[in-house]
Image (cartoon, rainbow, N blue to C red):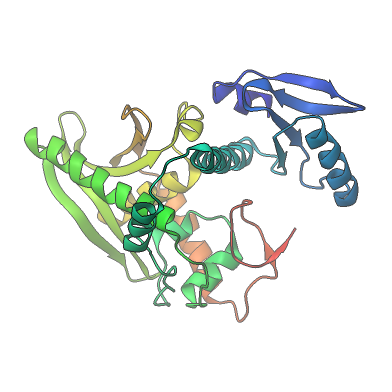
Length: 304
């Protein structure tokens, strides 16, 4: 936990005393307490009572991190930081006076995304295979209906991703390296369908797959020597399915438009493991009861 907080560029103090309690980590610049609960967590009633007292003592944000692996802690902490940033933006907007609410509503109405669409079923998608939760993958493969609304803000995030792809396309075309864009790739056994962002001509590696992602500052600082696990899954699938041995996961920081480019080589054993997982999911007659994904997973299963 300490390593992850440090990698995010935040200053912290551990075993910090607030009122009668000793908290795991105190991040003063965000007025934030971080508790490394682990998989078993604490007593919920006591946690709520304790958190209420901490807030009475001026603490604004409290994160309870349940993951135990480094990648899980990174994912959970970065997601919590993004939520914190969204809340800070909302509060800052509430503090701002003299706003024209008509145009704000107009923009929201124009970007209303409706609801997340249900998968057409009987096919796996690389983005879904990046989720370690078998229940979520079962639901996606079997087209279990989704009821999650797409908020205007979420829709604008999707639009940002499309705009980013258009911009990078211009950069790569200007340099004359683009061989293909938005290339649909499919596997018959198991049934997997995806879309490659770019195939480019690399001066040393020959053909290379480029998977493009955008990320906030909170997640950016945690990217040290490898991409996020779900993005690793995606590019490995594309390399194996397309028969290309080299790939790049290219990240843009949403805050200042700087880039990180992680180089990947094809992993044949990983492809074999993915096929085994898909075949196991297809053979299931009912979804697993428990959720084995990270905190953001919305499969509706019981937490282990």
